[in-house]
Each structure stands twice: as structure tokens, then as C-alpha cells.
Image (cartoon, rainbow, N blue to C red; front, side, top):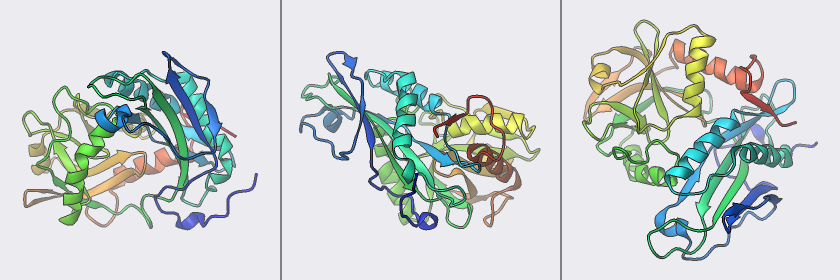
Amino acid sequence: MEKKNLDWGNLGFAYHVTDYRYVSMFQNGAWDDGALITDDKIVMSEDAGVLHYSQSVFEGLKAYETEDGHIVCFRPDLNASRMADSAARLEMPAFPEDRFVDAVVETVRANAAWVPPYGSGATLYVRPMMFGISPVIGVKPADDYMFRIFVTPVGPYFKGGAKPIYVRVSDFDRAAPRGTGHIKAGLNYAMSLHAIVDAHKKGFAENIYLDPGTRTRIEETGGANIIFVDADGNLVIPASTSILPSITRRSIHYVAENYLGLKVTEREVTLQEVKEGNFVECGLCGTAAVISPVGMINDHGEDIAFPSGMEKMGPTMQKLYDTLTGIQMGRIEAPEGWIVRIM
């Protein structure tokens, strides 16, 4: 299989139209058999439910070429489960989880020529999504839905290594109490767009959102979970019912305990603890970058600097990053079931 003629080492984090995508329709109360298609365009009614009432959920995962030349993807069963949970919250029919994994494998295999070669620093980003497509004029769930997967090759999130970023505490709320913060719905990301544009204008890379009830506890950013390392080298993960259950974060938790022997605690973390200097490292974790180190947090004009500094990723975050990416790329043996071999 011959690879596409791309400059793999200089890819950005952007969309490319690839050869195939997977589509399945939910109509008359059931999902059809689904198929690979070549058309990247979607035709729908101007009254489609997704356009008016935001019935849309999505996932993000990656496929890789490993050191020994195989194409694999990382824990797609967890993406399938999370999408089912997201769909249930928005009154959408869950796409069967076993079929989700099969569809990911089928779509990646069909686009194998687009999987970046090992060592290029690039990967194949996989985007499953589902949305209400039938006309809905009253406020109610749609009747018909489209499940779709497309893929696109992307470059490394950080060119030249992961430099620590400067973030701020936001005055906006990411999610309402007992709202939709714990699911991967498009509407959550729409809520964060104004805040992130404003943050970028003011020189910050991201927003840290506090709990909307008391505005004292750390939750997450617009697109990633947050993790900390305390002075004793332990991993501390903020807990909240409105935090998205990141697959990367859950994987980091396991790696920290079982590969690196770290003590891991998931608990409420207050902004005051951060101000008091209880943590020596901070990072944002997610599919795109794995771990983005945070060097400094600005809280309404007051800078909170971490001892790990603004020059490079702290030592514990670096070990977590190296171990997890080593597992993903096949350099380190993976826990059973984490890696799905495609070719």
C-alpha cells in the first residue's frame, strides 16, 4: 500500500479531504447497515434538527503507524461508550458500541494511505459524529439521525516540542450544574468559543473554568481536562460531575499508577490550593496534544507560576507523556485491550 504524496513532517492540525468516510442512517426506529462512501458533502433540510436545536455529539481519536509497521487505534471502545452516553443525554439513539468500533476500523483501513508514517510526528485523526437530520420545527428530538466518521491526517499539536502555555481563569462558565458538561456535545464547545477568542486576544492560550455553583473549584478548560502534580510527586486530578470523562485522562491515571508507580488522587481541587503553591506541575490533557504543560495561570491579573517553569514540560508530566505515547506508538507494551490493530 503506497502512502499519499504529502509532506508528512510539515502537516498542520487541519482538515484534509480523504478518500472514504463511513455513514449510517437511523430511520424508522433502526440503524441501517452503514457503508463507506466517497462523497464528503452532507445534504439536509434547512429545518434539520441539528441546525436549530443542536442535537449533535461527536468523538475524537487517532490512528497511528507503530514502530513495527502496523496501523492501530487507541481505546476506541471508550469512545463508543462515551458517545452512547452523550447520545442518551440529548435524546438521540445510541449507535451500537460494537458497530462503532468496527466502523472506526473499516474507515481507517479504507484510508490507510492517509495514515502518516511512523516517526513523522503526524497521526490520522478520526472524527465520529452523530446529529439529528430530519426536519424539526417544534422543540423536540429529531426522528432521523446520521452517524458519520471521517478521518484526516494531522501534524503534531506542538511543533518542536510541547512548550508550557499561559492560561487564565475565566469569568465565563463552561457548563451549568446538572447540565451537559459531562458529555461530548457540540453545544458545549460553542459555549466556549467567545471565551477562547477573547483569551487569545489577551495573550492567553486557554481558559480555566471554575465550578459554576461556587466558582472556587477547578473544573477543566474549553477543550481539555486538567491534571496536577503535588510537591510529593503525586498526580492529582480534579473531580466534578460536569467534567468530560477524558479518555486521555483516564489512560494517564492508569499509566501513572501501574507504569510509573505514582499515587493518584481524583478529588475536588480548589483555586485557592493552586494559589497557595500546593502543586509543582500542571497540564492539560486530551487527544490532540496528549499533555499540554501549563507554566502559569493568570487569575484576574495575579500570575500563579509553577516551579516547573515556562521553558519545558515538568519531569513528571514528561514521564507520563513519554509513557503514554510510547504505548500508543507500540514502543511500550500496552495494557490488554488498549490497542486495536487495524492492519
